[in-house]
Length: 327
Ligand SMILES: NC(=O)c1ccc[n+]([C@@H]2O[C@H](COP(=O)([O-])OP(=O)(O)OC[C@H]3O[C@@H](n4cnc5c(N)ncnc54)[C@H](OP(=O)(O)O)[C@@H]3O)[C@@H](O)[C@H]2O)c1
Image 1 (tube, rainbow, N blue to C red):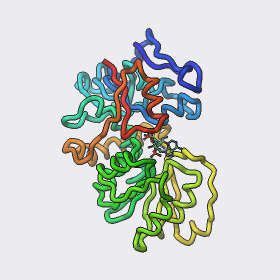
Image 2: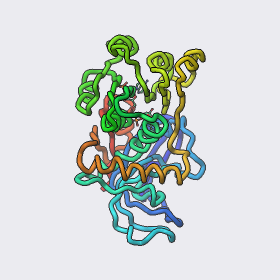
Image 3: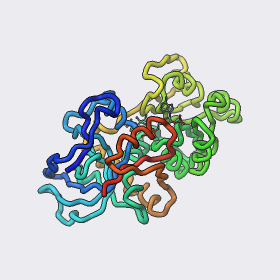
Image 4: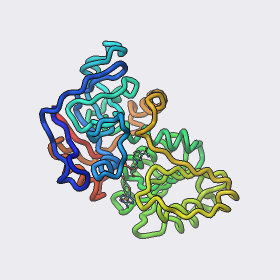
C-alpha cells in the first residue's frame, strides 16, 4: 500500500509518500479499514515536526481519523462488520490506503454525509466531547468561550455547546473567520487582531463572566482566561499554541474556586475511547444525521498532495477541516 512516511522530523521535505508498504493485519478486536478519506489535524503537523510524542504502540504514520470501508476483521470481531462504511478514530496511520483501529472506535457514516465529510468528524468530536462535556461539565444557560472558533475543534465546540443550550463566545483572527463562527451559531465573536478579547468580554457581559473556557492557545491568554472566569468556573486546556509556561496567581484560583484541567486524546486507553464513541453515537451522531451539527470542509487534497494540505493548515487561513482523499 502507499502511505505518508516521516523520514526526518521537521519541515515538509522530510516526509514522503511511499509505496510498497505492507498492509497491516487486524488482531483480535481490530478492523482493517480501506481508507477513502483522512482528516488533517494540527497534531499531525506537530508529529511531523517531531514535537508530538507518538504512543509506543501506535503507528508512526500520521493520521488520527478516517472514513472508509471495513475490509477485514480480527478474530474477536463479528464478521458482519466487513463491508460496512464507517468513520473512525485511529491511533495513527490514517495517511495510508489501509489502517487498523479498534472496532469500538468506528462510528457509522452520518446520513447524507460524503466520505470526505465523515473523515473529518472523529478527532475533533471526541476531543470536544471529552473536554467540553466530560471535563468542562458545560450546562444549559452557561456562558462558554472557545478560543480559535474557526478551527476544526472550534467549529464543533461552538455547535455542541449551542446544542447544550449555552451562550457561545469565541475569538478569531479575521472577519472571514468571524462570519464563519456566526454562521455556526456563535453568539459573540471577537477578532483578536483588532480588539483585546479580555476587554470586550469583560465590558460586554453585563456583570456575567464566563463559566467554561476551552483553550488551545495558552501563553498570555492564561491569565486573561482566569480573570474572565466566574466563581466555580472551569478552564480546560487542549493545547498551548502560544506557549506552555504561564503565570498563575493562586489566590484567584482559590477565591473563585476555579477548576483548572486539560487532556490529550491520543494516549488514552482503548476502553476510554470506546466509552466516548458510545456516548457520541447516542448524542451527537443523531444531530449529524439531522444536520443540526454540520462539518464544514475547507479543502480536499489527494493523498499525493499531503504537503499542500499541511501548508494550508500551517498558513492558518482555513475554515473548519482539511481532508486528504484516496481514490
Ligand atoms: N488535547 C487534545 O486531545 C487535542 C486533540 C486535537 C487537537 N488538539 C489541539 O487543538 C488545536 C486545534 O486543532 P485543529 O486540528 O482544529 O487545528 P486548526 O484547525 O489548525 O486550529 C488552530 C487554531 O488556532 C488558532 N491560533 C491562534 N493562535 C495561533 C497560533 N499562534 N498558531 C496557530 N494557530 C493559532 C487559529 O485560528 P486564528 O487564525 O483565528 O488565530 C486556528 O483556528 C490544536 O492546537 C491541536 O493541537 C488537541
